[in-house]
Image 1 (cartoon, helix red, strand yellow):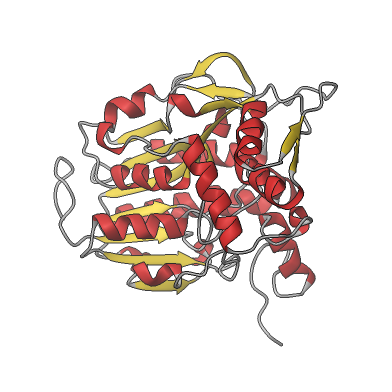
Image 2 (cartoon, helix red, strand yellow):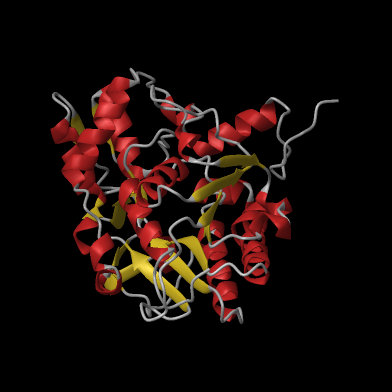
Length: 361
């Protein structure tokens, strides 16, 4: 393994924790392209493994190995000989965090921190954590930079901060730790999620021809295409100590992707012939409003900046939905909403309330 001032070896062993979700398939494909000789290993319990939204081949074909396991249960042997670990695993949005608050802490924070310690003990040189800009909460005024006050409003955001603080406190001179504070994810994936603002608007436009914004449309939200998220992860596993230090928390995205909700609705509506949108001018203010400053990421990762555009992402989303003949007007009650997928497993008796698979009797 190379030193911290050097790039990874040409055939690194890279472990993806939580790869069978929305982001993981894109990350696997991106890393395989960047590292054709890498040993890519995915670890995931498989809650959403069957929620495919593609006619293409199995997304995990880019991996060398897929392990089905709860990341709360991984042991030290997994990390032996590994060069980098990418921690994507999470109870991944605010409604899920509210429904499974204790489990959110167990998975998003405790399990990730434990994995980081095991990785450090095994000699892993890079640990990448998928954090979130939601740690800034409601933030009026200027765009939030990394040194801005944190104001978590949800269990999900609190878990991200808790993990960041634990990773920062680690005394691991042999392992660079990077927390990528991602903007709100969007864009096409072989396992599409529709419980994300832009993806939701695209699904509304395709199925109903109308986007109904429940707020007054004024809240700000930074977005990032999942393909650009993968580019950021590729950078983080290769960054050297002179690009941010041994510990780095950085906003991952682009300043041009700070949008107001009403602008997103309008952009999607204009991309679908006959579609329209409406806002609710009498709605209570949305507490999740914030702009984010991505200048540090631009400085540190000039060759891995986001390359997708809002118009291009919308076009690609609509193409995917049309390609899979998506017609479900009740999609917000479907398993393409992650909370609904988990509740379906629980209802069917295959998953427990603490989000562990139930074994057959």
